[in-house]
Image (cartoon, rainbow, N blue to C red):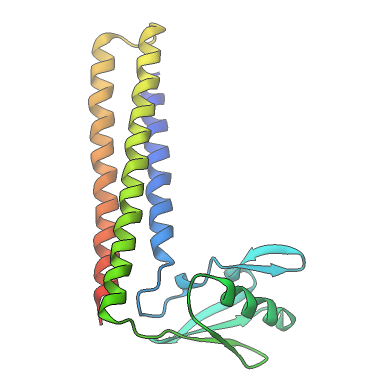
Length: 185
């Protein structure tokens, strides 16, 4: 029971940190990267699919992204999905490929974006703390059912706290990396 509680806690916290990483990966930093558009949902034969499954995405230079559809007939849907997304870049369609020019951010825009990343990081920390609380409740329930001893309960609480600190450091690392990336000119 002890190991199961810890394994479940780690698994859920890993997923929470991965979710945070994926969420900030798609935020525009002023530099072109396929991550900006690869998860945009495109209507493709009646199904919503990520852009990276209906087109190849390349970055020929630091300020532009080129999207080349596998099926040229889907180019209008790709263009429409990019326009409707929160990326904030207007696509240019030449009939075969879609070009995206990534504009420079002003200092104020970069600071706002860093503040948004910090907010998302704080939401992730709250999620991690909630997972800690849930894991401790599970352990306390196991103690009541006599599946854990009093010593085991204290030990598992300490381990869960250590796991939380470890994952909070990962969130801080992702936050710091993305903030530096955004603030680069």
